[in-house]
Length: 154
Length: 75
Image: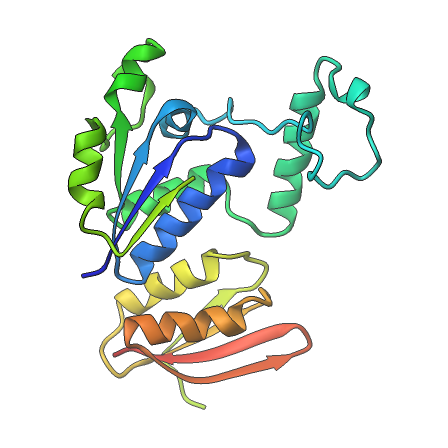
């Protein structure tokens, strides 16, 4: 059986999609998949994903309906507005929500591993995270990653 | 052409048509044919890639008015 390992290090809405899309698709193609969530990537394992947002700030590649000066992007609430707009767009275009993709990963036996060091670093509680995940460190990741066909850092 | 089951994946973006195809095939018997209809324009390449990697056979793929139809035979 082919194997794929992904390290997910980002916790923003845009960067949350690639690990979940690739993991669920690889699983559908018959791969054994493991995703290691570390640093901000841990946000993607929280029960509540509503804190996963997108910001136009320092993100000049983000397509905007109107050109928006950086001074405006800094205003309070802009992040919430940008996130609402992006989620609305994703929904209209038929792109799955993060919750849906994550559930599809788990259903397809994708294994999620949370970085224990980062959990401790940010004082997270295991109860913050979804069930059916494992906790481990770099050596745990290497044990699986060392024998994979595809290994990605996101 | 004859098929045993139909999957309506219209309006769904990547990778949902592939994931739903995989799911639909799971409870079908070997040799049975699944018809998939979707509107994702990337699906023409993706369905072939799915077939190549899973061993299921893509019997046909057609496009008509922005809709893509596939017949996938379970291995």
